[in-house]
Structures are given as C-alpha cells and as structure tokens.
Length: 78
Image 1 (tube, rainbow, N blue to C red):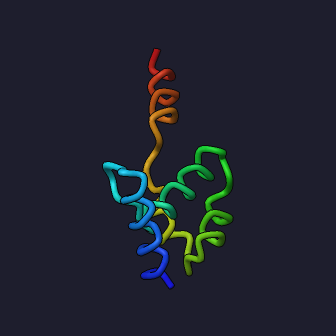
Image 2: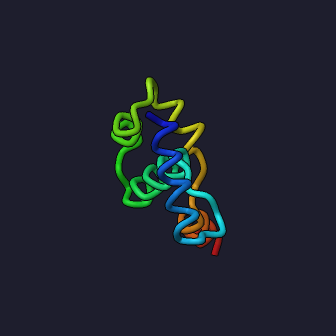
C-alpha cells in the first residue's frame, strides 16, 4: 500500500511541478508535527500514527522542540 501511495504522490509532484518530492513518510512527519504544535499528547500522536511505543514517536517525529518552544524557553533567561 505504501508503494501505491508514494506512486500517487510522485504523480502529484510531477503534475504540480513541485521542487520537493511528496512521500508518505513526509506526510506522517507533517501530521505528527502539526499535532505536536497543537499541544496534543504524545501518546495520542503515537497511537494515531500506529507506533508500537511512544519512544518510537519521540525519536522519529516529535523528539525535539520546535522553534516556538525554544524561543519561549530562551525568554526565561531575561
């Protein structure tokens, strides 16, 4: 199924003349990042993506802080 989805995304990339290729793994990453930015719980994101453990989600998709979180953290210094 993943191969079929990537083939469809490749066709869309070509038809829209996009400079970056669309792939299912990028879609999953964007989905997880969007949920993370919306402050959804990591366990729910992990379940939605279908990971066996929260650790997998943390390591592959939402392990780091986004720029807003970094700026907020840095604000505490002043």
